[in-house]
Length: 186
Image (cartoon, rainbow, N blue to C red; front, side, top):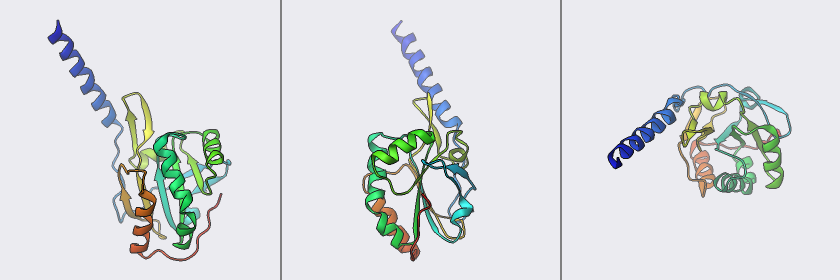
């Protein structure tokens, strides 16, 4: 009886792992064109990659509004907003939450950049970051893409640690030679 339960539990765990990998798409490689998108921000305004042609874009995907890691990451980016602007970079946050959730999240934490709603999960899929959490919920993995002014992936950070990530991205922008003022479209 105990052996049968162990086998059933192992089979269930295997099924969860297979299901988690079933949605894995290839992420665009550094040097490749960033996948196009058209998404609404927390205020209902539409944004597309083409809107940011000629600017550096820090596009960070995160799992869920108002969770501890996501809040840490967003607030660290907020706290460095002037440094990002000085580097000529625009910050765009993306999760599969809806516009209303993003509005509450952005207002609660005074976020000065666009948080884009990918409720249909198509952009997360195109960027290869859509994953299943515990085999139940589809969420964006915590990845960051630095997109150059020509619309190519300059750097991709996978499964980032939200604490200190903002400083890491700023250092990479400087290494890449990003400079010049940028303004967010929020």
